Image (cartoon, rainbow, N blue to C red):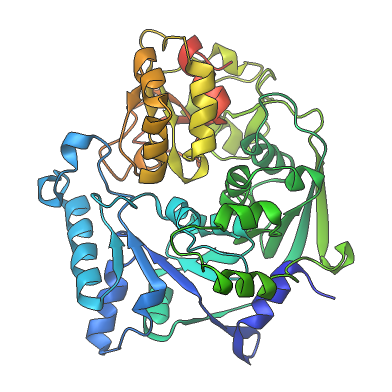
Length: 455
């Protein structure tokens, strides 16, 4: 008997040596930040590109989100951002790789476009030079982030050496309450079990809560597996998965699709006893979550008092965030609200935010910035009239990109300012020098924009 993860892994092993397996890679996703050195290494070593047809590129980390700043790469002000985007364009042209550039109808954050276009499919092995590649595991795939030297190896061989991890089952049970989402679940898991609970494991989310969860909510869970220390975060494919991938751009069509479905019929864990370890979380009484510190484990219920300082690390974090013990999140003045990222920049997230914001106004002095994770999400926003809801309320509606998730583009939070964010990391300086990040769900973020404080 095997776990879901083991079944997919074993099907992709070409050979083994010592404690590592050589895995064949079905899909390689790349972006402008971690690929330039790998391309250059290919040239220096005179290595050929093995499978450009299994490699897809997008521009996301450095792309401006203001429409007036993204008409042409040559107009981008930041020298490094401009250089990385131009280099990606040049490399993709040279090696015949399909690129979804800033003006492509398929452009978006790499972890958004894979599932949206039917590139990320159940049973696949997927890699990308990005730590949040585990996102694609929600599709029932083995997906993980790799380093630049490994990006080069996949370019040249379409294979990668990797040590097979242990398997952990993360059992989520109970019916979610009103306005509680998968973002609250993953933040609660990390606060309960730490940022290293998944270290050395491939984790599989399972349980009745997962079975009842829509695909886009599942993607949020797998996205933040890495924040729990796990390189992989997988979910069993089911009818919801199949309906999600059906008729996507790159999904097999007709008889080929039926044949493909036959090939993934056994993609499930045979028995709970197959896991090396199981942890659990009952979400029946789960409250909305908010991070208060400088790592995702420093998270509490929305109405809870911040805990007492127990270490020098806690003290440093509290000082950085400008908070005190026995203080509540509602006492924090919010400066910026960011709704977007590969964690919560999907259609479901925009719908949730719009439902909260509709008929209301963003509080005076607050900036609420809505950034769709992809062009597909942007089209939905405009087709369904969500743009009018956001703009009438006083929100800023931007173009797709990683945006405020990380201080790598034009979008940065000012020093000592508090940003309520639907992204995935709240480290010191993550959103800008001396910026202060509070991780929340899209529902909580939208509510904060209206109230001007964390509620």
